Image 1 (cartoon, one colour):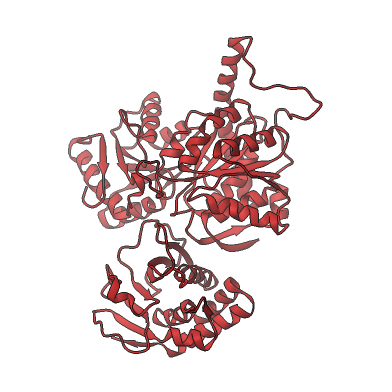
Image 2: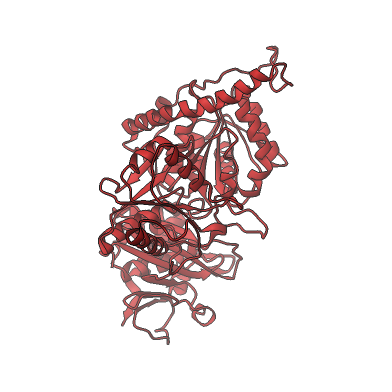
Length: 395
Length: 186
């Protein structure tokens, strides 16, 4: 075991190295580029026995690793922002073909205007592709979850590809200590690759022809839906196994921070969950407000049972989204409202849209939003408005 | 200064002077000293010679806060001419520190403590020059350690680990020189 000062991007590259990926393909885009630069350096120095396929676009990058993975290789790619948009079509092909594959996404605002800062719109746009979708809070979690993602995606109960998202710059280019377990430790954790079928020369197999039977085609869709459900247990078991090996666990699909006695809750995904923790501590110590924080780690599969369990006695919930579906609301909010309603919960839930396009959000901003909104609930039993754009400062 | 929960540091330099490297080395040194740290560049394009900023947070526990640093406890200025070009003091806390590369006591005044050291001369003395520029970042790290009571032993170790080899030893020596020569005035 060795603790190294690593950026989120280098932590991602180390995860691919420790997973002994055989094929890497990627196209440069800020803020992802240093992930594959580092992997290229590992390969050039002989520290990683893998092949880099040079491609002319992100669409081809995912196509290349899709082919490699279908052929039996553990494969890895990384992108973000417009690169992920250009790759989007291929995400459907990989998931629909049930080929295990892992990707890191350095989340970045979509243009126009051209903007390199963090925003979750690129990641949320992959919501319906069938990929497992995870959001990391810090660089250790980037490394840990990428390693675990190989195991989860290659589990026969799952056989779906997976994404680990890391926020542009505030993780991708921020250096912090990251524990990188020795190769033997990871080797003992990650079994040889498994997948539902292997495409090999001389072994005839086609994928993706026009179906003879649409019922079978629809059943394939339902099976992806069921596999996402099955992945929940697998993610939790793999998290526990990782804990036994490294002493680090994250709660599987979600973590609830200071929830044991909480009256009011906030929820979010990604790196700003760290700022939310700070806000929760200060709201408790300085304002006497019993606030809990739902850190939603997996957006797909969506942890609906866990969220509803924690909220069964909640007085209110504020969901922070760093992206929005114009004409509706924030994507995290939409899922939370749907599934808590289906679970029979009747609590006021508010959507705060903040930090889009990389606008900086401080823990004071979060405190201000909570103080104002929870004040409304304490006074009248509900929020004054349910979708609010917050630009920082006083709420 | 490190006894409070979180120490926030902003580095001001010019592109190519090694402000980001200094912030990264501080994280390595902090870990060796039993502290947690994060270091990050200003989030945007950087050009050689242009004013740049880098940031570091040091804490007794894992640093959770990810937002930009608005009210630094310490500013570190690698180029003595920068205070005339940009407001390096923006947001600096009254009980904070200014650590600056300067051959003499700077003429700016404020409520904070000012620590100055001739880091350019130290760098030149140790042959730390790249493309004609003295590499002042390690000498100033030594001065920073003195200014915030950071254990110098771990700065030296951090530099040698981060840079390595002969250059690592030279940079560590420059840091120690910066530590011993820095002058702090109220």
